[in-house]
Length: 602
Image (cartoon, rainbow, N blue to C red; front, side, top):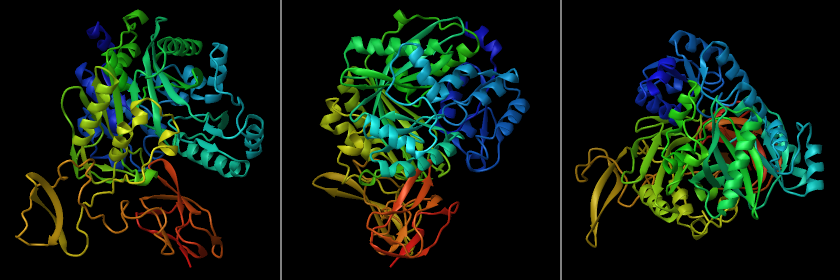
């Protein structure tokens, strides 16, 4: 059957980058399908380019100039002779116009029909489709937001808080939670601005914001022969900024009959829109009730957790379905085994709960190993994580015979992982997995930001260069009470009294933590603000999207003065001193680096 399938599908273009592009390339290679990569100027030497059979330059740096440039990708599609296109996730993966443009060339679109993307890609119409399938959604609106007055009216009617959500996107991009009427206008503006940059569409709608929910999603698959199944559930409740940090399969702590009902509801939603290929139907679960949230018409970042529990390569299944093959199994054949946990390793400094983006070059990347451990990465040592793209470095996925076994294995594997260069979320991931609330499934989508204490957790960026005083970094071995430790020190260049060896973290370190000296102005050195000096600095590289103050304004401690976009997220840059604004050093559209002064306060 595979031979027949791939006589039809011989060469696949991956219209994406990073980890998902590498993921698709690997499966395609196993199945004898050649691959075509595309890349921006910044990704010229990236891992997905190195691994693909062919690679074509798109030019530009930003996503809009490269991975979101329809004409450029269609040109490569024609020149390469690819007969299939896999969109990955993000970028064009949920863009019906792009899917239709690809299909119109005669190339197989490895995803759902454009019509299904139109229904489910628009979160408003997806709510209507779920209603037609008799699947209840979270109370909300089915009209595009026109003004902040509508936000206020909804909040006054249904109660605060409320959620403004991007109609054409997901992953927490373009979502803002509004707790009071006076914040409605600024929240709507920020949500629409972020959605426009992430998805090319700014339309938004409203939902009631549940206060302590679980995020439960269902992996669905449908073929062109009328077959549709669900491959269990995943729980994605460990989140910050409405974006996932840790996912697991199956969703724990929920009665089996409820999980079955959620799965059956997901299949109803998929069938209601004529769905084909892989998709994820998301639900909110609270107080033993579940509500339809949205459907992501693509492969999810967290799909490996499902793969480990159900022993199926979902990318291979995507390729087969796109080639016209039937699924080859029914719902009764879907049997789970054990438990899987996926941990996202992002280039962010948890910084006491702030999760500040931390672009930069990876100087060291030691991956964990052992039974039940898998790492899906889009980078290796020497690669650079750019401010212009998503901050996901890699995904650590583990399998265990049960949830506790998987949790302990994930902790062990995280402690073996060393990433130096950018700051990473590894210390926060460990704090989550170690916490009694997570172990007992008492967490929710709000738990990381409202209940988890990350005050002592940080992962400063590791210097990749000299500190600027003529000294160099060396590593020496020291022994304390019979235990050997590797300690980093800075010594005058040429000092032979300290033995240098291959750089690395000390024993027991996580994410490159250990003795280190952050470079002045680096992401690990500054909080947003300026330490009360009167000079407000930015903690990471990015682009100024808004200046919130003017010369002569009086500001308070903690007041936001600019908005910085970095790694597809907006960040408020706040003052750590009260006073009068005497100088503004930036304007919207300016690029800034870590430690740059943006506002001066006297």
